[in-house]
Amino acid sequence: MNDDKDKGKVSATRRGLLTRLAGLAGAWGLGAAARPVQAAEDASSLRFPDDPAEHKVVYQLNKADQDYQDHILFSVGAMLRAFPDNIHIVVVAIGPGIHLLAKSPGRPVSPHNRERVSSMVHYGVEFHACGNTLKSLGWSADDLEPFAKVVEVGAADLMLLQEQGYAYISW
Image (cartoon, rainbow, N blue to C red; front, side):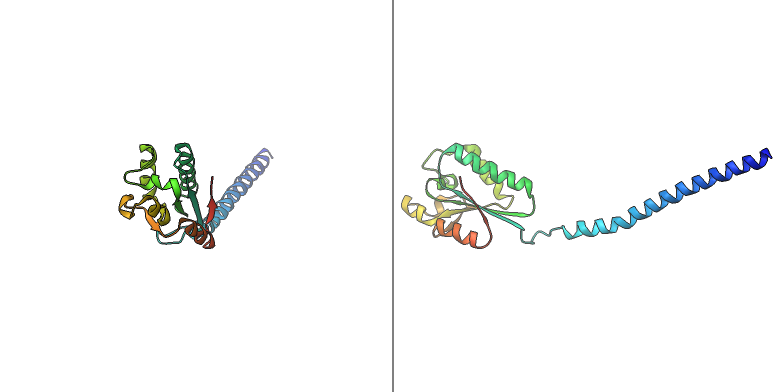
């Protein structure tokens, strides 16, 4: 009779083991089944280099003050970090802010901020310069860094970009 009790214990142990293995296999199977769904979700969020950005923002840069420019450029950098390949940023320089884009600024501009601007261009940030401001300074596009795009009227550029869905940021 001890043999029968031992056999019963072994059978129960085997059943328990098989049940646990079946549970693990089922869990693994469910996990494997969920992986293609996860992969499909990941694939839907993949972006190709020419895909339009889902997020668009335009900054108004209208002061030559270094602290002000630091804040604007810090915010641009933060947005690039938050949405690395899914944001299009335009900085529109008007009035005294245009000196940040000048080859030879007429007002003090920190070398650090000039480097930051040049770096941001490599991440797709566009810098627009107000044509009216250029005229009032007696400057032309040649007086600006080569990456700066001259727009006829900076304020109109801000308006048109907002009409295209760009969020407007100003300090």
